[in-house]
Length: 263
Ligand SMILES: [Zn+2]
Image 1: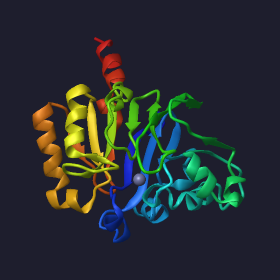
Image 2: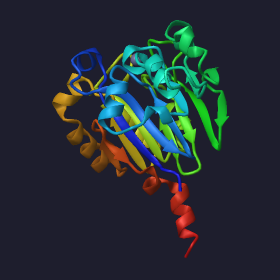
Image 3: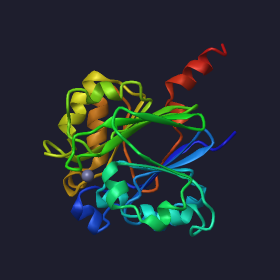
Image 4: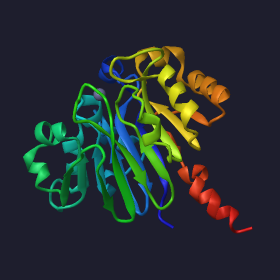
């Protein structure tokens, strides 16, 4: 069976944490359906890939939620790694309009098999995985989140967004819900812990992963924040750590269903 897993090459968010690399910012590697997805490769993606033993040459799809440094800075470098320095035309880039227009280097763009400008509400299919582009409300107006419906599990990466009423509904069928949380109480542009509470009163994913931590969250201790949320909302909540790998199959409702049917 092909490898399945979610590995965090970084869990930092906010300018201070990213510029000082208090937490790294290399993005998230998702292996599912025989493919390797690299979500939001920010500064340090190549270094962290090496450090945590991930082979970026094996990436099949690069997903870029928006054109902010912590999410997109190393995309061109990751395309280079994926295509053997441009020698092998390969892979798909799915990215926000602003990133495609302003962040993508033409040289590396030409090395891709395909390039998709993602628009909220639309979707595409790669192999046997459907990727739905979800709405965000953020300072990068063309930004999106991603919902990956893989053969093994449904994973939602909400991207950078403030809370809005339809947000929980957009991600209600996620087994794994990855939330970028930047503040404890309130942020103009991103989710706060208070917003996460609002989400968890409406939907109950099998696993919630908090990441994209600012200095405020790190001071409050993400582990503690996650435990409080878990106790209050009776949903499994974990705080991502740099280099953490989880096996989503153990949290997939689909898989549990299949397992139950065996008896
Ligand atoms: Zn952002």
